[in-house]
Every structure is written in C-alpha cells, then in structure tokens.
Length: 424
Image 1 (cartoon, rainbow, N blue to C red):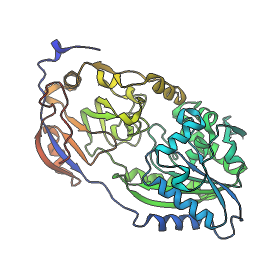
Image 2 (tube, rainbow, N blue to C red):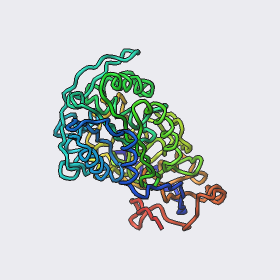
Image 3 (cartoon, one colour):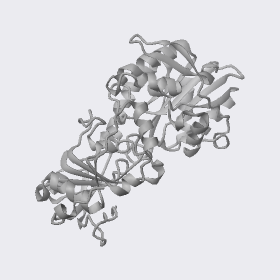
Image 4 (tube, helix red, strand yellow):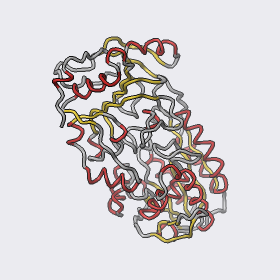
C-alpha cells in the first residue's frame, strides 16, 4: 500500500458540522390490509382454480418486512385454494446455485418455516424465444411449469440501469427469473442499453407464460414501507413507470447540491448493490454523473467495507481513494465474479495505509482549505450527514436541513483513525 506520510503530514484536517436531513415520509399503516387489497385487485374471484400451483418470486435484498409480506401472500393464496411456492428470482446471485440462492433467501428471513410454503430453487432454464433486438429470453424451468406466476418486488431507482424500468417487477420477470442465462443475456449489450432490453424480455415472458401480475412495493428514505400496489399483467408497463417516478421522490439522498470531496465511512452489498448507491453519490459505475442524481462531487474517499458484504467490494471503482483496511477485507473472487456478470470493469482507486492519509489525499486533491466537504456514514443511512463550514449557508437556506451540532472532529484521538460518525 502507499505510504505518503512525508507528502501529506502537513495537511490540515478541518472540523465538520452535523446536519439532520428530512425526507418525505409516507408510511403504510396496516401492511397486511394493504397487501390483501393489492392481491384482491390482481387476483379477482374465480381467477385461480383450487390446487393452482402459483410460483411467487422472491430474492431482492433489503426490502423491509419481506418475510412478513411473503407470509401474507402465501396465506392469502392458500385461503383461495391455491398451492403456492417461492421461486428464487435473483439472476446470477447466490453464486448461481440453488443452494446459494436458498441461502440468500434465508439471509433475507425467507425460509420454508417463516413463509409456510415450499421454496423450489433450481438453476434449470428453458428458452422462450428472443426479443425484437435479438436477446434470447430464458426463464426458470420451475416457474415456467407453474399454473401461474406472481411477481413480487420493490420498485426503486437502480444503481446502474437508467430508464423507464429499473429495479422492480419488470426486472424480476426478465433478469430475476432468467437465472444465470437470463441475467447474462440481459447484460450482454452493456448497462447503457439494459433499460430498453428489460421491457422487451418482460413482454415475451408475459405473452408466453401465465403471469398473474405483480405486487409492487415502495419504501421511503427511512426504510419503511410507503405503499403496496397490485398491478394486473396489462398494467405493469404503465403502472411501474408511474411507481418508479414516485420512488425517485422518496429515496434518501444528499440534500446538498455539490461538493468537492465526499467522505464515505463504509460501503457494501448490504448497503447497495453497487456498494455505494450512485443515486446518492452522483457517480455512475463508469465515472460519469448518474442520471437523475441531484448531488455531485469531484472526489470520493471510502474508508471501510461492511462485514455483511462478505468481502464483495463491488463498486469500489467508483471511489478515487480508499484504505488498506478496506482492501484487506476484499474477496476479489467474489468481487470480480460480480463485475464480470454485470459486464463492468472493476478498477481500484488509490490505496493508502490509514484513514488519515486517505483523508489527507482527498483534501489535497479537493483544494485543502477551500474544499467543500460532505461526509456520510453510507449511502443508505442518510438521516444525518456532516458538512464543512463553507456549506453551512446552503444548509441554512434549505428547510429540509437542520444544523444540529457544530465542530465535530473528523479524526479520533488516535491520530490515524476516522472518528466514529455521530448521529446526534
């Protein structure tokens, strides 16, 4: 690792100011009631016959109350005489094996015991055809053999894909249910074109398989369920577009317009599929500005990798500077497998021996005393941020920002370590 203490020792580290951010907070008051209402809309009386085998999709990370949601769905379907089961729909995740995908579901709290239905995991696929632009369409063989398919997913902006369909029901039906082959096919022409490929694949799936519809989940910036919506098959195209725009308005973000230096305490797959969500940092996987992001920065320093990430440092290439501590926690086999599947070249940032050198290098590049600095704990936990003195005027001008504590140190008493992030 690089030891540039001789070059950086005289860099002055400024104190920061703690700021509370306030976001829109619609919340579902009664999750079960709202979910059953959505199911009644998608599955009217007489739609399913007794004994119908219904494949219910599951697999996206980080959805609040997802085990409870699947438990309610399973109970509803069984009360209507159906024979539901869970199908992992996560493309190549979980190592691309049935066991790995079962383990991934278990990590989300979804087991046969918690949802009270079988989980039928298989990486076997069948080919349904190809899209007008020549993309082969693959579908999980177990799901294809069901009497009906019900898609369940959170709708939100994707970390890498930009378009009218990002993370949601369309992606679940195209990439998720496609297993390894389907995920590879949808990624085959690069992330820039994926937003247009997804609906073409979805339409083939819907036209050739008995898809009941979808249950779309929205969440607010505090990780709470903001709404549950039932979309019939013919409504997914228009309905998901509308819900994605609602989701854009609800996500957490940095409410400062721009900075010279962004400090990120930690990154990880449990925080975001991209390690650091580009919708928050403003920086896409290829270094460009993420479309739709309201914040931008010149330089990014990331200090650590979460334990729950399991060594997967996907997204590290969007940072400019990191630490040897983060690098020592990185499992390059897992990280590069993720990159290759997504067709992203994962590049390493500059690596420094300790927090102080990483911070000092960032300050040097950003203009030292003139640098406008923002610090976040990670790209998911955004209720509190820290800002430098020269951003306080912007804080005071924004009614959704509240300066709650002044003069917070960036470094701990141990000179070379970042101080813990305060949230009060």
